[in-house]
Image (cartoon, rainbow, N blue to C red):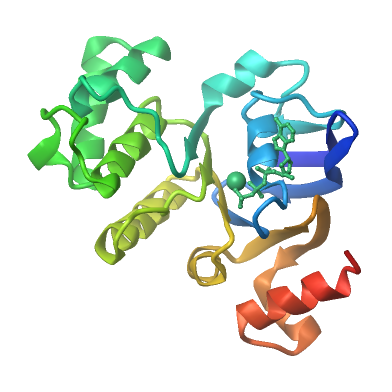
Length: 242
Ligand SMILES: Nc1ncnc2c1ncn2[C@@H]1O[C@H](COP(=O)(O)OP(=O)(O)OP(=O)(O)O)[C@@H](O)[C@H]1O
Ligand SMILES: [Mg+2]
C-alpha cells in the first residue's frame, strides 16, 4: 500500500508538485501518468525516501517516509529507467548479489533468489558475464533483478521499459503480472499511454505538478466519452488551464 497525503515538493522557489494525494492498494498495478517534467520521478524519489516532501506525507506499507524512512527502505524496490548505474566490471550475478548483501541477505538466500529471478527474466545465458558490454535491454534486466532481489513488498518502477524491445517489454509485463499475483504493490510511471493502458486499471494523472485525475481509466474514458488514451490525456491536460 502507498498513500500519498497532500504532498507538495518545492525546489527553492519552484514548485514541482502541489497538494497531490492518491492511494495505491496492495496487489494493484497503479499508473503514474504525466508529460516530461510533470513530477513523476520526484514523486517516486519521495516514496523511496531519497527526497523529503516539503509538505504532506507519504505512507509506504504503513510506514511514514518522514518518520520511519528505514522501515520504508527495507520494503521497497526502485527501478529508474535510463541509466541504470550497474558496476560494469562485475557480472550480472555479482551486481545483483551486491545489492542483496546491502539489504542484509545471506549468501544462500541471495543465490536462491538470483536463480528464480534469472529464470523469470530469462537471464541464464548472460548471468555470469560482465555487464560492461551488455545491450541496453540486458542491462535493464539486470537492473530489474537487482530491484527485486530482497523481495520487496512495494515496487516503484520509473519508466522501466525504456530501451526494452517488444519481446523484453512483453516479458516485463508478464513479470509484473506475477508480482501482482503475489500481492505486491506496484507503481508504474510512464508518459506512454498505451503502456499504462495494458498494465493498469487505475491511474493518477499529473500535469505540471498538479493532480488532474485519480481513479480508474474506465471512468476517465466514460467521463470524457473518449476511448483513445492519447486524445483523453491531451483533453485533460488542455482542460487544466496550465
Ligand atoms: N533536484 C532538483 N532541483 C530542482 N528542480 C528539480 C529537481 N528535480 C526535479 N526538478 C524539477 O521538477 C520538475 C519535475 O521533474 P521530474 O523529474 O519529477 O519530472 P518527470 O515527470 O519524472 O519527467 P520525465 O518524464 O521527463 O522523466 C521538473 O521541472 C524538474 O526540472
Ligand atoms: Mg522522470
